[in-house]
Image (spheres, rainbow, N blue to C red):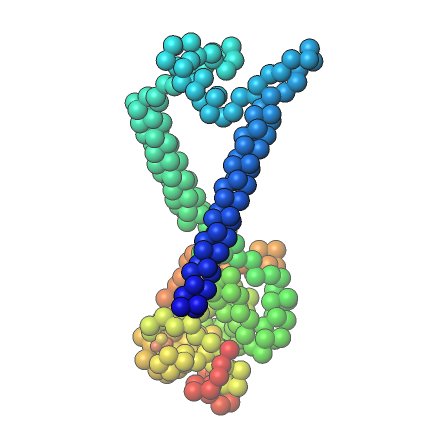
Length: 285
Ligand code: FES
């Protein structure tokens, strides 16, 4: 029984404490709210120079004012500048510009191609216009050419003319006249030279020289030719083709635009035999 009384007393005390705490919090909140509202009101009020007060507008006040103004139709423009009305671009004008661009591009490309083609045709019809293959190439002074051939071990290569220049032995000239005398190469052969096309008459491989044998030896199918391009063996149908030559003012010129078919099989005006081991199957240059 005393325990029950003690428990009831404790509950009453606890209830009183709870009641007290709750009432204190609501007082504090009310006080804070009232202070906050008061502070906000004072914040909006400013003291004017004349001693009066003016109320500062909030964002909500501004919005309300704008809505009102819109409804009454008296919105004030931002400034006096007149705003240009937007005009949509003319689709016809856009189409014309695109067509013009395409037309001009096509015309330009056509003109460019035509120009390049014309230049190529002129270069082809006028061999002297360039110094490359197909044109007349000045090989040089006769003595200088001889020196260059000796320096090359019996062979002078002229890449611009795709040709080899070798010496034609003076002792073979009499025999040679019968074979070459009526060709446009004779003026150069008479002076002791032969200009040979590097292309093998068999299937067109480039024919290199062979220093050891002093022959031309084709690495493709084994045709070989003496130093003046006369065929000495292999499947080629004739000797190496050669070029027309001229000599003027002691200068040898070769016309790489005039290719003469090589001498027939069996032609051997110089009687030259292999002077050493063949280069066929070995590295040649
Ligand atoms: S291409 Fe030279 S022998 Fe065939």
